Image (cartoon, rainbow, N blue to C red; front, side, top):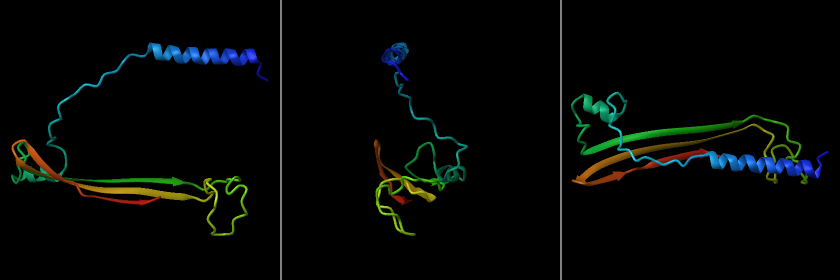
Length: 138
């Protein structure tokens, strides 16, 4: 059983610890840095073309890059006695009407494929075309 004095003491201790953490912290500042040079060891189409003498990587008038990203998630089955609570019992294959998690296993993914095409239009001006395809299973 918690007494009012013990509860007040715990609150004072918690507030004191939080205040101490705030006062002990220092301000952080971001530092601007120039972009890093292109890595010769990186595997990409532009490096491959440059190594075969077909592209000047140090003075690009055009470039093309791509990226593929896949993120997946899985939830194993578990017992959830609260699923569809307060509603009629579910029949096999019937989706629940409540907002709770399903007790069945669930898997989902999000995938994206992006291409980057760049072209120097004139000194100081560049144009980019960046098509992207996104797929998902919620």
